[in-house]
Image (cartoon, rainbow, N blue to C red):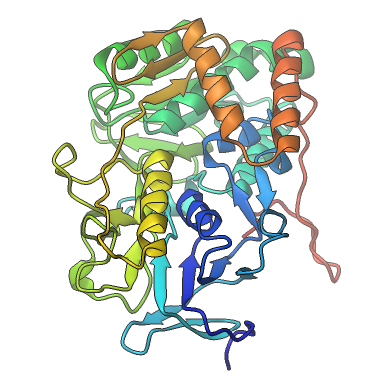
Length: 433
């Protein structure tokens, strides 16, 4: 059985994944001489940098998501199918999906990355990742549900397990989640959970390295640690988490922290696909590519973004797995494909800088020529992320939400929404896949 795609005499490009890389490439190839097939397990694009705001009840999921079909409404050569890809047969130039098989002339792997638990099965079973809108919603439910339970718990140790939160990983995601939780503790919880002593709530940020925001400047790292300490986050550096059984977080030094919730932001692992030769897979399951993003040994199979491992003079260990790399690689590949790889241009990453926000009026920004922290950095972070969102409506809604939150120190999005289970099954909170 084959996927029902209109027949064409054009060369067919199949793009797997509608993240920053896959979506950018499909948009650049719209109205080109190719037939473009975009595949993704969701029918929407997710703006990953703002997942944490969904998890912290600052934004609704619809504000950071955009329907893929709407993007290509007026484009005749781009087709979308919602499905997963089981495997690829590079010899037959065929991919297999639950909908059927699909032939390709060019195949682009842009499946991004998922949470890396570094082989720790106990942590994988109990910790909460945050690499999708669904996981962000699950985390929001878990946090709010535990605060509701804590109101009726007398035992101190049991109550601490419900209200204390541990974040593992001191990169941008971990830092931003910690900052948002600290603000929730200061401004929201005392008003809504009046019977709860909010001074009992402890927020722990655990980082295995000797600094936060590793990869950014020392000024940014020091400022982030100072900002978090100022708003009450307990930062632990040079500390490695070795286990989490659902009640206690265990560290390599033998210490433990009582908490029922661990937010895991400690690493990512590329989403590879069955059928790709093992020799092209490298560290972090990334796929080796040449300077044109062609998979090593293949001229018509490409990898982009988090999935691609490309060595460059300034990046001898591969590019950082961030959105700008994915977008720039997609743009370069689109240009080469439009020219049928006649005198193709090698990819060269233009590092536009890095940034992270640590709550209200606090952020750190590293640009190529200048580094700054504080209120102005926070404004720059807001503007950059606002304009990066897809859709005018999303930009407007997010701006209004941010403005309202800034003026009132409040949001009205703290809803515990559980998935409905039919056929009389008992309703319970569970991760929506």
